[in-house]
Length: 487
Ligand code: BG6
Image 1: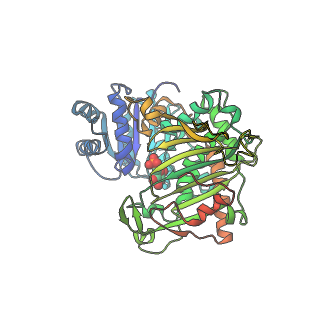
Image 2: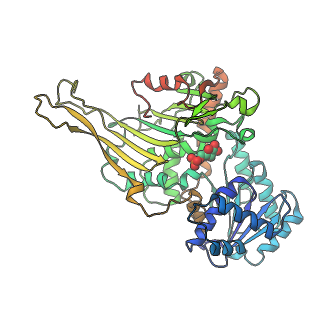
Image 3: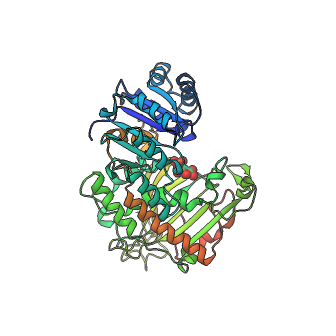
């Protein structure tokens, strides 16, 4: 399956993700000359609409969501001409037959199907495709999260799709893997000689992964309530980042080698219990407050009723393997945080022996810190010790930073939408940046242990005012260990 697919079939084409991400990404690929001239996009949704009306909707979305300098009327016209719209209700065989007519004669040249629908429609849609004869060895299928809400339900989803497609045809999307900065973690770790020898329990004290968002749940409460931050962000994005940070070096950059190493990490996560959740996890829910100078309402007000769903979670995780023995991984994510800020902090241990004063006291000696900022800015910053200039008898040390601003180093390079990379890889059949079934299941196994622990220990979300880094117990979670969050 090395030929790029000639046809892209999108379910959920009238949805928010399609408008904000998928069509702008496809447009960018076309404008960069990365789609074949006779590429066909078949869009489907439940609404009745003809091609012209739908093309108009896509054009509106492009104008709204593309970066201001990207919209070009000629490219947009060529793009529109590639798109056809076919109304389809899962379970409606006539409509699937019409869909198949639109793709008639093109199946041999590869079909990439993208499911941007609620997961309850994944299996019925796949069945509709099968009945309409659209599944061949040249068909691939991509699906968006959530894949289930726990291990058992994720198996049902995966079994449903797996009954009709081989694993090599299934592309599970985690859009964080499409981000340049996340892929750059591989380059940082395995394209440089100086980090890998220190990347273990001998030199690293702890790791922090933070994904902070300023937004609340505007308009998404119906999906989010009952799901919460643990399932919405940790189960997928944060655990994927963790697996890349913690994995053994894969032998090569190919889908099997990379995913084999990631899944080993995910399987080594120490499960939580009803005892450990009390000290190793914090749940929070935002209440009214101010974010970036704006007064905002609380989660319960947005929902219109009280709820036990967490909008913030902080965890202390352990990876039980040789490399990471005893190294805590502090993970946190939340809505209505003070800043949109995603970063990884590698906190190194102190030097083994200080030659500066007694244990370095009074000299300013501090352990090294490596900060990898993923968004909104992209940089890598290493704090190292340096002698403060001066004639004092006792050497004084100051922290200085080695700064690599990726935005500056690669100025002039367009910042791409994560979905551009993922759609291009889907079309080309490269699964490296997609999540394999065993990864999803290992992720859920660990998440289920936390959810079960919360249930048994009756752990409820603690309130935090919007515009804070979660409840105060989140600070205590890390400070008990003598460390602190890198805010
Ligand atoms: C999604 C979550 O997967 O990721 C959202 O469902 C979250 O709740 C989003 O806001 C964050 O993505 P990004 O790319 O803006 O960091």
